[in-house]
Image 1 (tube, rainbow, N blue to C red):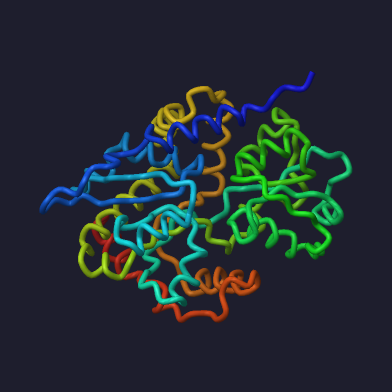
Image 2: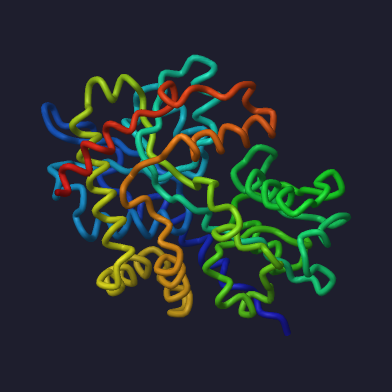
Length: 338
């Protein structure tokens, strides 16, 4: 009898955590004259763990900040909050939508890196799918056209010469939903956390050859920090301090000394997960070191993401680096770390 994958517990934990388990002061109004910072980050599994670790380590408080953090499943809500002024910044979320928004007149800027490598892999449970080329004529679970999971999947397939016109993409939902569909066999392939490669057999799946996006798409910057020009002008010191807090935490979590604290944080987010799941996520971080410990994004990474947008038809021209990014805040943040 086939076991239902533990991803169900993960989805429940994601919903619980995003609703309030790891929020830090969510819903509180900024204190008059204080250093409250309103943050909206993507509610992925690794992000929820990092948010819990940041709260546990009091990383923001160490830099004199009072964090008001909301984990958001819909990236358009993050963009709307930053443009509308209800959110000061996002420090860990996808940012492909930033470029077309700027082209349309939004005054926002990318101010640092978050996760520099994709944390996903392309999995299957089908015996007749061994290579990426085998997916021609098959059904692949994804998000909506233009969603991060869709862009990552199509980019990987194109790298290996797959005719994506011969692939049937099905909008399954978020990455956890996609992985569940792969495990259940309702789609022929789809993404899941690359950390699950270690224990793929438990979920009745295996990684497709060249399916590890952390290794195959190293220039695809998974998440970044971004904000509005207005926030930079009015709250620069607060943003710099928040960037420093993130850089310090990124360095910590990629060190061996962080393991007990990381496990405690992840267990608080995923209380029903097996120890092997925590170990797999930890091993992924230590192997790939995906976090931007120096916070910097260069022209090559920015242009790569814009080129992808153009290939997907969501952006018409490549915008100049200085129009879309301001790394001076990241440099100032690094000075606070000594």
